[in-house]
Structure formats: structure tokens, C-alpha cells
Length: 259
Image 1 (tube, rainbow, N blue to C red):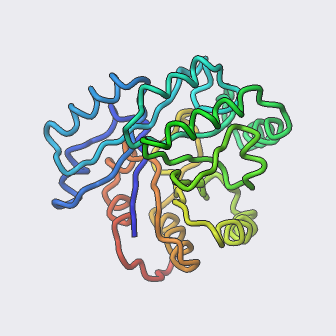
Image 2: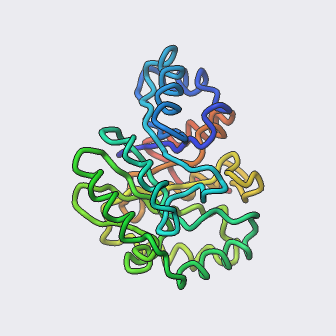
């Protein structure tokens, strides 16, 4: 059983709460960072007082450059990944960030970009494969077949770990049973991490969130039922203000409860 936490807003995170709630255990997090220097500075600040937090890197770009990495990213910005060589890093492989979020704009953004030609997809794949020789990489994206993700620069080799977003809070309730049916089949033969959420907010600040902790627990039970127990939780700064949610992510045995 592995638990990892994405932290998109390290400056908003109550690290004191997180450290104390771990009760001496080590928490693994990947923090958003704009450069190696930015990462090292944040890591030093966090670990100065909280030794039981393992701080790894989540490279991001300025919004005007796409925020996430993909085959649409300019080569010089892809080259910026070289500075993270030798670290443990998480990379989101997604098309450039849209201007606004809603369920319908997200669908348009997702499907339109599946059929566009990403000019630097091979360049990004080469960069990721090169980095993977001495860098511990988790590639993260949507639960889509590899042949589609490769359109965005998704790379596959045995040295890379993978994460797929589940994020049931984004799915309308009426569609959730069908989504779970799809996801169960999707992850059947995958040795990967699966990200649950969301708790708190994301980069748009208006993303749908869990309405109560039972929704989070239901998602954890879903993955245990299908024997997938390497889970990621998004987002740590939100969790740091919600003790009940955080403790639910650490439970070793979440039993069925009445809603």
C-alpha cells in the first residue's frame, strides 16, 4: 500500500498539521515548482521544521507557456526539464491549460486536443526517456489508451512509473456508475498509481470537489475492491485544512458505512 500526495499550492499548505497528523510516519509529496532553484528553496523551507515529509518535484510552466507538459510545449521549455535530472519528479502530460474550467469546456478541450497534431511529441518522448535513465519519473495523465496519450508525448519504458487521474468529483452523479465501469476495465492490467480527488481547489479555483468525506471513502473502497491500492490524493494544501479527509487517506481498513 503506497500513499502519495500532489501539492499544487505549497505556500497554502499547513505543513505543521500534516506533519503532526502523520505521527512520525513519513509522508511523500510532490510539490509544484517552476525551476530546480524554486524546488530546492521550497524543500528546504518545509524540511527545516518537518523532517517526516519527503518533498519531491512537480515541474510546471507559467500559464502562458501551457502550465503542463505536452507535445504542444515549445522545445526550449521541454529542455527546462534537464534541470531536474537526478530527482524524483512527477510530470503531467496534458495539453496547454485552457482559459476557463467547466465540465463542457473541459470536454471540448480534451477531445479537440486528441485529434490535433502535437508538433513536439517525439521530442518530449525522447526527453522523458533520456531523463528516466537517472531520474525517478511518474508520468500522470487522463485514463486514456496509450495510443491516444502518445499524441501528447506520453512515453513508455520500464523505468517510468505511471499515474492516472480518477477524480470522481468531476463526473456528474448520473454518469459515475458508467465511469467506474470504464475505469475498472481500464486499470485491470495496469501496475500504476491512481489519483483520487479533489479535496481543496485546483489551478482554476472552481473545480468540483468532494461534497463530504464519504465520497472520498467510497472511492478508496472502489479501488480496494478492484485490488488497486497504490493511491494518490489531490490536493495536499486542501487536505491540510481538513483533518477528517486527511485521516481517511491514511486508514488501512475503510469499511462500508451508511451514507
